[in-house]
Length: 515
Ligand SMILES: Nc1ncnc2c1ncn2[C@@H]1O[C@H](COP(=O)(O)OP(=O)(O)O)[C@@H](O)[C@H]1O
Ligand SMILES: Cc1ncc(COP(=O)(O)O)c(N)n1
Ligand SMILES: [Mg+2]
Image (tube, rainbow, N blue to C red; front, side, top):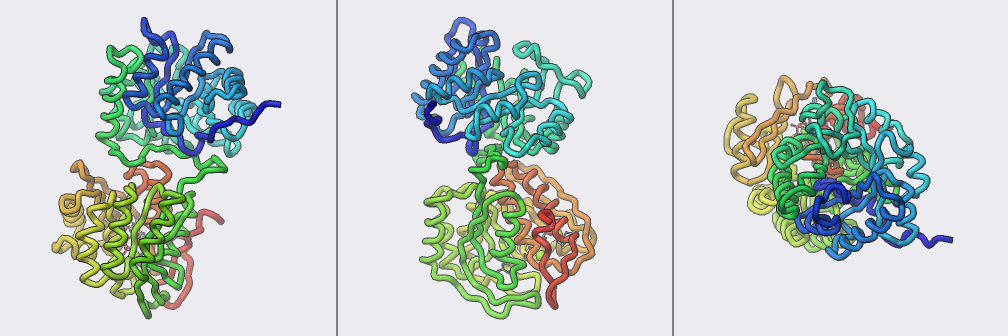
C-alpha cells in the first residue's frame, strides 16, 4: 500500500506566466540544479524537467533534486514542477513522496486520459497542442483530463527537434495564430519554442497565459538575469495582476472566486442578485458583501437604505480572510461612510483585479448614489480600480464633458484613465445606433468592443451584469481585453434571450447559456 501523495495539489493554483523547461542536455557545463536554482531566483513560476534520454531512475533522482531546490526557495506552494513525457517517472517519484506536481505530455506520448488515470485527480496534466485541430481534440477530452495546453514554436528551434507544426506556412506561430489557439481552447495556453526576451511583449499582448523557454534561460550567460528579464518583459505589458494566472475550471476541487460589493435589488435583475447570477454563469464562484438595500422592481426604486459601514467592513474581512477573491466587482454602495470603509478594507487586503461600476442612476431613472457618495467614490474608490465601467451619463458626470458620439466616448475614456490611473470602459448602451463600448488603457491604447444593438426594452441590470462578468473572466485569468470581450458576448446572449418579466424595463436571462 502506497501512502497518498503528501502535498496539496497544485492543479487549482499553478502559474503559467514564467515557464522554464530544462534537462541536463540544455545546461552546457553548468549543473541542472544550478540552472534551476538561478531560474527560481529570477522568478520562474513553473518548472518542467525534460530529460528525453534518461531512464526512470535518473529522472526520479533529478526530480528529487529539483523538488528540493523549489522547497529550498520556499516556493513549493507557488511554483509547480512537472516531468515531460515520462508518466512512469512521475508516478514513481510521487510514490516516493517527491513533490512532482504532474506531467507534460506531447501528442505522440501517452494518451492524456491514461496519464490522468495513472496520476489521479491531484496531478497537473499539461498537453502540447500546436494546431487548431489539436486544441479542438483537447477540448473534446472528458472534463478534468488536462489542465493546460502548450503551443509553439514561435521561432524554429533546435532544442525541440521533434516539434513539428502543421498549419501556418513556415510552422511558426504569430500573435494572430496564438490568439486563434487561445480562443479555441477551454484551457490556458502557454506559448514558447525559440522564445527570447524580444518575443515576450508580443506574447503578453496575445491571449497566452505565459511564455515557456528552454535556451533563453538555460543557455544564457546569467540564467537568473535572463529569467528576470523575461518576467519583467511580461509584467510590463500584463502588469502585476493575476492576469495569466491560470486556474483550471476543470479541476473539480478548485474554482476561481469573485466577489461583488454592491446593493440588493429585490426584483433580482440588477445589483447583487445580477452579479451572483452572472458570476455563476461565467464559471466562477460568486460571493457578496451587502453594502446597501433597495426595495426595487422593474418600474423603479421604491426605497433605498444603507448598511452600517462597520458591518460592510466586517463582511469584506470575512471574505478575504477565508476564500480570497481572484477579482472584486464594486457596484452601488449606499453612503459615503461605507464607500470609505470599502476602500480602506480593500487596500488593507491588497485586493487585485478590482472592477468598479460607478453606478449613479439606475436604468429606471432612480438616483442610486448621492453627491457625497460620488465624491467618496471618485476620491477613494476609482484610484483603486483596475477598470471602471461608466455608462455615457456617468462618463459625462465624471469628466464634465458632453458625449455626442464615438469620438467623445473615446476622449472621455482617455480622460478617465488620466484622472484615475486605471483602465476605463465607456459603455455605449445609452447611445442610439450600435451598442459598442470603448476601452482606454493606462498605456495609452484604445480598443472598441463592437456590439449590435438588440431591440429589447428589458435592459434592467445590463451594467451590473457586464461588470460582474468582466470580474469573473479576470478571476479566470484572462487579460483585461479578453475578459471584456467574453463578458460582452455573455451579456449580448442574455439580452438576445428576450426574457420578458415585469411591467417596466425587465431583467435579462442570466442563465441563457445554462439551459
Ligand atoms: N439594447 C442593447 N443591445 C445590446 N447591448 C446593449 C444594449 N443596451 C446596452 N447594451 C450593452 O450593455 C452594457 C451596459 O451598457 P449601458 O446600458 O450603457 O450601461 P448601464 O446599464 O450601466 O446603464 C454595454 O456593454 C452595452 O453596450
Ligand atoms: C441595487 C442596484 N444596483 C445597480 C443598479 C443599476 O442597474 P443597471 O445595471 O441597469 O445600470 C440597480 N438598478 N440596482
Ligand atoms: Mg443599463
